[in-house]
Length: 427
Image (cartoon, rainbow, N blue to C red; front, side, top):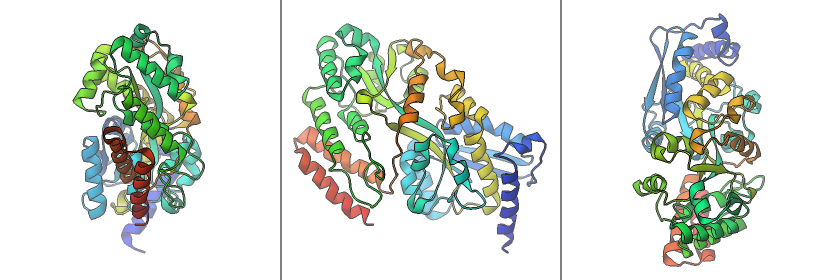
């Protein structure tokens, strides 16, 4: 047997006996080199969560030091793409946003179903749809979820009051949402939302059937001419025709200014956006925002973070990497710590009975909005990921821009997108 493989199996056996990383804290010691460094590559705020968790985990693993390499979101995923393709500077643990799982899961990540990981036995612990998100081709499980992003509608209650609009007007249906936007614009001058694309992003996630992904089904068939895409494009066109969007992209300076100045009345996003608004995007708007479920009873996931092990990373440290991943994802106290300290909405179901969910959120005027987000998380349906999802997203956005800015008709736009994606899907 290869000496490296033998050492990995020994470490793996020890990790599995540790009971998800907890047994060592109860007196079982793990043998490791005093110079062992576990490298974790992550983006905000997963990097901060890993750093905060490291001291307790290191205490249970004498001689092991956790090194967290932090990069901004885009830079991180670019670096991980390069690392996986070249095999150079691979971390032991890799954080990934859900949109990258399909692409990165094409052989570059460890299949956690296999021994000695046997993660199939752990999947019932998580919000169900996240397991499907982390399932790549051939049914391989390439990551475990560490936080999720239940979709929500955030709205400025002061603007609604000024316009004579109720929250129910916003959420009854998508048509009612647009009608409320017309009234808000007329009475306050505020735009309903930042960009018509935001509405499209939610609507295409509604009504996905079993066996379907966002853009492709389980048989690689392209789905972008289906009714949910047609309706999403039609609604987005109505937004633009009625001048209801500010035509600014999320995370742009103009978008941030709109949130701060009250020129954007609503924002369709993940629940995590509230933390960004309160901490740095628009803290001066504290008390003015409220949260609601998405219009028309839709349930949609909006982002989420996962932890994976690169297949070609140091085999001598894979057991340690697996133990650290389990510590971050399967330990209830750690998941709740990340929730309360960093607003990372937990993926672990055993946390859902914690009183913190009912606690008022000062930024939302004391609204206990986490109850809404917990309900949403339990209703979101699994959506299969595909290796071409990121490319498909770019194609659909390009065609939507042609509809909104150039007057291209919707059937032609979606047909053109389908032809391009059909060619790409065969690669």
